[in-house]
Image (cartoon, rainbow over all chains, first blue to last red):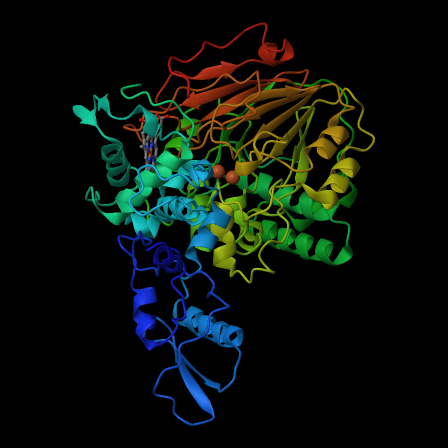
Length: 243
Length: 384
Ligand SMILES: [Fe+2]
Ligand SMILES: [Fe+2]
């Protein structure tokens, strides 16, 4: 379980043996992908692992190595070291998935407040159904949480993703999500004539300054933007209802 | 040199004779200050051509080259008023008419000023993504101004073609002029270090990066060694009591680096300005009411016509009278234009003409007394 969760972090994992090719790669349960068409984040291949050798090698002197996506394939001479094959596969996969670096790129562009550090919990068993909390668990929580917020940052800064008809994105008025005050929601907005949740105000800004279409509450872009906006106000006291 | 005939007929959308004259003359003088011979010939030939074509002057009017270097200011300094418009961030009209309408509103405001200001200063970021069409539509709208226009460049105008189109429309971004005894300097303070070559960014990607206020890939703004040298030269020999106004797009001090509310070599630029008794810096870029004073230098920000920025989370200067939190339900709130009344001592009353609120005056007495006198009324709702 833990192992699977960790390997899933890097979408690019070279399976060990044909059977595990699929198992190692398909295991994401509820993984937050970047909303929209972009591919999920790609880490580096686990370089130490042996590559899976497909049974369908073409010639005796070369082998086809199949990536866990079941599609990306490279043909290499027999005896090629695993790391070299991994590198080639990675390059091939990157070529086909130009958006794969989205997470690193987004984080370089727009700083994100870090998610809480839970390393103090390592070694404890409480509340866990699958044993002691490992450093990998803690790392996974943080990475996955920050990934959702990063996906939100990407939408927040991109007029196209927001569906703006006038080229306007949220950061134009809210750099680093400043002045979004998520800690004050829910609150009564007289202009809306009711109590608004954060997502109502996000939608209001999408419809008005951004001139786009309101998003459904469970739209991945809405979920991601809520995550980003909340992340950026880390440390602020919750004060629902505050104007 | 004689001025053009007074009160020429005015047609909407067509530049007034005065505006044209001022622009052409400034362009010529600006060009002449580049002492390299090739650009001298180019600029002067262009100016002669334009002027002769307009049938206003014979080309001979422009020939005394030495006049280009302004004499040190002597004699009486007269009070005057200039208007400002800034940070319109225009897209093409077909994509976004809101920002266009906002700039037109500002032009109307200024044209309705009575008496008319001596000139209108444009504070930079005329375009949103530096596109030729964006700059052109901006230039077109600004032509409706009755008073002559002085232009300054902002980062949004520059980083698509590194200023080619902007210079074609408006001339060199660094220049100086004297007005009623006050020496005025205009800088390009948005010089960024090359972050794009190593990353293999296209011009569009470079522009998009700079256009994101919170985009950390870009470099901090600076004036740069070349312009600092130019500035030193420009001010050389001027007595310390020369009233001095400096225009820069970014604030010429270090406020908040993450949003480039910042000029990296601000200390060096301030050192050049230090020997003058009174210096006022007017800047764009921050889209908010912003006041500061460092020694002899008084700083005032311009409002944007397009949108207000939040106040930076840290480093806000003590003298700043914050504007009200903008109401998200009113697209014009927190936006506006304004003017400055420049006094004979060179200090200025800065008027923020907020479109949705009462105008606020930050007087010279307020900054001169370091905030102890003449405090502007405080708005109802501060930002938090
Ligand atoms: Fe701006
Ligand atoms: Fe700017």
